Every structure is written in C-alpha cells, then in structure tokens.
Amino acid sequence: MIPNVIHLTFGFSPDFGGKPFSLVHYVCLRSMVAVNDPDRVFLYYAHEPSGEWWERALEHVTPVRVQPPTSIGGVPLRHPAHQSDVVRLEKLLEHGGIYLDMDILCVRPFHELREADVVLGEQAAFVDGRLSVDGLCNAVILARPQAPFLRRWLDGFDPATSLWSGFRSTGRDELWDEMSVQYPAHLARLYPDEVTVEGWRSFFWPSWRQADLQQLFTDDDTGAYPGAYCHHLWETLAWRDHLADLTPQRIKEGSSRFCVLAQQYI
Image 1: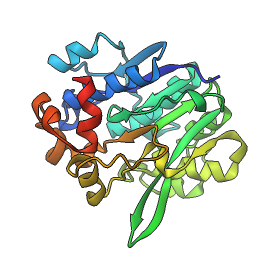
Image 2: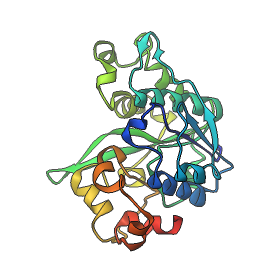
Image 3: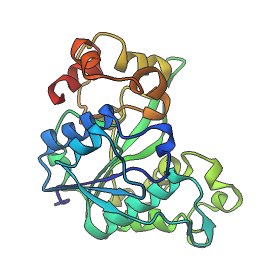
Image 4: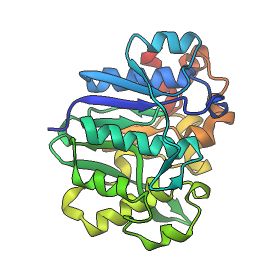
C-alpha cells in the first residue's frame, strides 16, 4: 500500500511569499494528523518558519531542511512554487506517501485510496453554469515509492524528456500551473493505467473562484460536500480577505464551512 506518511513543503522563499506560518497552517496540519493518523509527517523547508504556530506545529512534524533545486534538465527553476513542485515529486519517488499543500484541510481519511499506485484529483470549477475541469492538481498526491507515473512527471520538467513538445517553447516559470496541473492531466491521458483519478468533489471543492471562496469562508456551512476527503483553501487567493488576520476567536465564532471544520483543532 501507499505508505501512511505525509510530506509537506514550506518556506522556499525568505519572505514566505508574504504568507508566514500562521494559524491556518497549524489548523490544516492538525486536521491532517487527526484525520489520517500518519506514521510520520515530514516538513521540508529552506527557510525555517518562526512564531507561536510554528512552535506548536513542531509537536506534530519532523522538520527537514533542504536546498531547493535551482534548475532541472538545464531549465532554471526561479519560482519557489516550482521548486516545491520538484521537491514533492522527488520525495514521493524516494519514500512514497501522501503529499499535501499546507493549506489542505482534511475531513476524511485517505486510507481507502492507498491501494493504488498514484492518486490525483481533478481541479474544476463551474463557468457559466457548466463544469470545467482544469486538470489534475498537485496539491494532493498519493503515491507508492518509485511509481512510474511520478518518474514520467518529473522527467517532464526537462525539455529533452518532456512528453509535451509545447513546454520546450514556453517560459514555464511564467505559467503557474503548467507542470502542476496541465502536465499530469496530459500524462493521465497517455498512461491511464498508472494513475487513479479522483473526481472534482474529492480534494478540491469548493473551487478557487470567488463565489466558491465565499461558500467556503463566509456562507453558513450546509454540509453539502459528498465524497470530500479534504478541502483546498486556495491560500494564494484567500489570504488577504480570509486568512491573513485569522484568530482563534474568529474561528470559534464562525459558522462557515472552514470555521465549523477548524473549530475542533484550536
């Protein structure tokens, strides 16, 4: 089975991308541990966080300092997010387990998914009333060690071994989700036997669109999320309005989906 080990990344830039380790990250970490009961939790970082919530998080994780890759296959990796993309694949190839972004709030164990070789989930949103699937998002990855799909994915960062020729002529550091969402979806079409694809409700719903962020952080919780294993909090888009000034009191008094789920972890 896929090892019940969780891998996390954080702090690949000195300023933490303007989003330091905060209450929301601690809440998400607590949910990962409480829901999945992992054997170990590894957090890979280049710049160590600090503060109250980091000190509390150290009770639950094994911190591992890493040197982020600056290039792969001769292609520069300038953005910390893309460096993290590579590190997560390397660690999963070596050890296997469950990779989660630090803004993943778990609600149901991944245990029943751990018999597959690799598991990814659809990233989707409703546009003009119709469901549009963007690809397969790398914010949640379950994988066995040395899974062929992961090797193909990592090889795709190198233009010499990429299976999508378009990557050779595009500035991949300027395209946010090229290797993290679009390419794994391309590989899944080529090698469907090497990956199990979970539907859009499993990992990434509500979506990143503003109406869905409001549903997650502002509207009263309806509990209408059938099949969800976790929720992606989309912190890049939600930080300013919903997460930067989050306090335990706001969580305790809130009635949104996020607050109702987070209340048990503070």
